[in-house]
Length: 345
Length: 225
Image 1: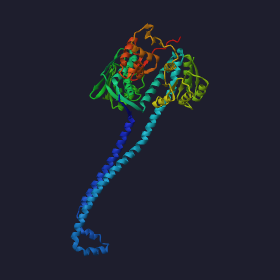
Image 2: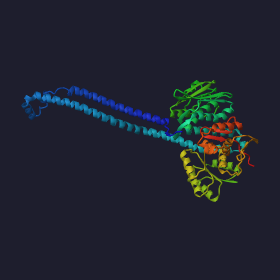
Image 3: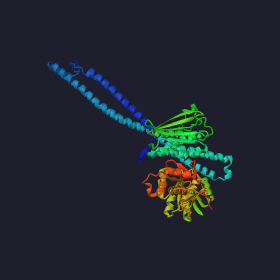
């Protein structure tokens, strides 16, 4: 068994780093295109002006206010052609030097620009990151804090005398307390951010375990759980995540199925992916609801009195995102639902 | 009579737990803070203490530390709303015996108290329907003898001793296979399946599977005579 300490990045982390990268790329492309533009303009200038041979008349024009220089030029008249040749050559070399200097300056500008863009990106994203982290911390703290009164409520209800516990009012309280606890625990799982031990796990055995765990629930409704898994499928992930994900899907299948039906669970390798298919003959999901399924607290319109938090599939989606997986849901109302989860093998 | 120290600042929670423990036949001293807990520890000799970690003023950890520093070795069960691994390590370093995360089932608390106090001198383990005497390799289901292999009986022994409490796969293997645990890759699931069959546990309710973690034996407590 190989253990690996893996830092789990959540969606927000991915989103933030994506935004930061996009910012850096934008700034860089602005820098590069400005450089290309100025280069092009300088090239045009140097080819039109610097590349031209020098003209003695231009020099004469500049001597108008300089008596001594004008006299000197007159004395040197005989060597004019020689001077013009030399001046043209110097001009040419100057043009080449400018081009070389420009290449060097551009490289420096791009380098400085990149560093500045990365730095600015970090700085700009920081407040957003902090805001998100503090929101996440708040949800965690709130959910943890809620556990205390919930524990007191659960204990008091359990401790109540048997005849009191049978009254409709107390029954309602007990049911709703259970529901609150469930929502709270789901929220905690959804918002947790932690360093998890990730190891290579045998998900075939784990799937058998999950099916065993849910057997009593299925038994209550006389639902037959049929498990078909390829043996010894291994995957590097947190066992807690795998169990949570699969349990949510199978639990849904049982919950939304009528009595005396069958839920089939298939786990297999397909095209470099691990595919987990859960098929039920339950109430199905209305077409109009399919797009919203998996959103936090969304529950399909036909779920009625069946208990649920509306966070189950959001948790599944979050886990799939962490491991680069995906899911598809095919459903026909009153006929059943097929949920297919895919994880990279 | 078992003497229990209960430290919990939430009054409703404290009262419910107190009543529950009293009904279970314990003498309970219930206080609301670690400071009062320290006083109670000085004045009484307890058999077990149940301590909330998050308390106003001194924390539950400080109380645990105090109890151990004073040289008391009775079991300490912490209650907390935080299940972070850091909290756990901190608690066990100080001498914590067990840990229960809020909200919890009162039956689970009772089971843990019983597991840790281990007061019974009789080696026979009794639950409502089952009875296991490890020395004579005898197992009774509803007073009828059921045949198990020695290995299955070892597995049943640790599971039943921890009735309602999770037994981790590692603990189960170590207890049942002992020295051989490292050599073979013990086929736990096959043995569990056999045990379930013999117990008539068709819907996996007597032995519950906790995926990837272990198993929980579930049978109501035997009536205390």
